[in-house]
Length: 310
Image 1 (cartoon, rainbow, N blue to C red):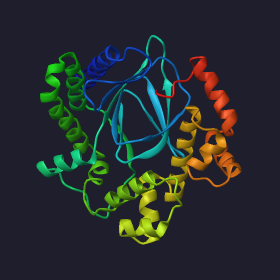
Image 2 (image 1 turned 180 degrees about the vertical axis):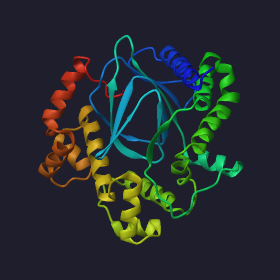
Image 3 (image 1 turned 120 degrees about the vertical axis):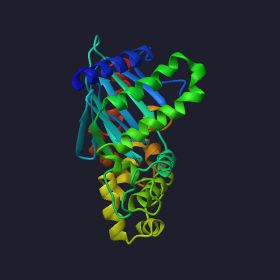
Image 4 (image 1 turned 90 degrees about the vertical axis):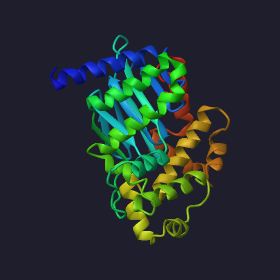
């Protein structure tokens, strides 16, 4: 069987499985804790979120992810990997009611990558290397095979505990062996520049509402402030201050959508001293001031035109 034909058949098989385990629109948790099946029958508005480390394989349709000004599009011939926590926006750009967008998402932890590297003959990256923490690469039949076997376990839940860890390990191993596997390897090499940036990212995330102290972050990373800035931007496409700002604004938007705070309260909760400054930065990122943005989004949710979970 020609390689291309086999790949297409595998994509179709994965799409059918995702469709079966996605009873409606949105993101569906499964009996495998790190596995999610995602379905959308329509093109969506951009969804802003902090994307944690994960593999996303689109079996049908197409999606676009924005990391600052960088645009990443992927469909059935590609997969996307995020290796560190990144504030991004994602938008489904190809979907129909009879041909919905269908996606396989597998979350993972850096410790899983470390374990595979320690027990395999895969070459580790040089400690000084830093690569962007997000990439798109071409799917292969071997990767799709492993993904299909993992989703098929949902048909026999009694097999999940014994077999899911092996299939997940194989999936991650296939990515590590791929053309851009070094992006994943870099987060697992203790002492590497990317590993230290990962620790800085965690510090900013946990304390995003506090003033950013570059000197303290540089000390945490065992880098000079200028070296921290350079490596942080190589991994995240933004400076530490820009990263913090995006985390703050995305969290403020979440608070506003949940109706647990008004604009001024949300501003103070995420670390802004000035509601007017918050409103300007919010409008710069989301296109409208907070009140107008909430009015638009709630109308879209009520009309079924927007699902913040997709």
